[in-house]
Image (cartoon, rainbow, N blue to C red; front, side):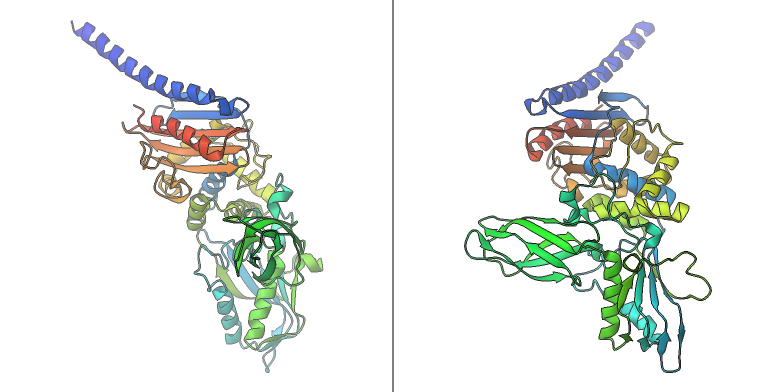
Length: 488
């Protein structure tokens, strides 16, 4: 009798497990069969992290572009390799002596350390973006500097000058989300442009002002005033180029409609900003603002005993940068984290070197076969990441000493960040923490689900080349995520 009860109980449990799995499998089967996905490429996996059991899969090993879910690799790697409390540093040097009259007989050098938070809107209130510059000038004045015979020279050379990672599109690089990484970043590497628009459709727009002011910027404006409700303009321009082209349309009858683009040259811009701040404070700089790249300066072994370190400015903590990277999906921050990893491990902060270090770290913890990382943000369409890769990363981070910190960087479905509208008032609300990704014909989600039954699930879904709108696809993905939220 006892044996029969045990067998019956085992059958019931097995049936419940199979039934739950079948529900998820049916959900992904129904999803795959949607007419909007006839020509789509899908990579999906959901696993029970406690048992390692696969709940359901669809092409889990297929490596495809994923958009911003790639930021999970950048943020997880930064926490693991650099540490949550690490702060990037910007250093201010002088290469001459200060005489009795307060004249610095030499130059002021700004040595970049890959800090993406200088004057960032995410860490400062509007109108206070230049507070760090004011602090630097105060420090220089306290040292007795009243004038400078040489120049302000910005040096971001230890991170290279590639301008943009491999696979970034020309149509992205001039826009705000295409602001590339650099050894020196300032104001989120954004150029805010304010336009006056006309009263009639098709009328010209006028660029009124920019923040910051970029010396020698040439702006080719082809934006028209139209009966539209938002920003339908596009900014084009290569890294370091002072030529910017703008097309598209903006709403009628605005005195100062704001459009955001990428800053052409953040290294020179910071030198210019400090030069202006010094000038405003009455300190004359004889040779103005310069940059290592523009002047093609050889900086090997430059910071030796003849250089005097005056100021060390610490940026924000890695954990705070990572949180904003995932919550707000800030491309520049993700790229900056990758570059910082390369810099701290090898002394050279290029995207390529950073990604080598990322892959070196994870190769000991997961199978990297088929993983192709070309940037940190996911903006590159040359990236190839599978659901297997994401679930392996998420599982590894689940048992990391940084697990709680990493999970706290992720938006909560229906509650926060880029997931504030996902599964809103649905079964998945509050049970899903994940990173989302979205580009033209790419939609993705990857993260954790705390199911109603207490199951701890890692999941990833990426869809390429769907024929419906992004919002319609999201509704269909929500059905799958809601099913996982009640998985037993």
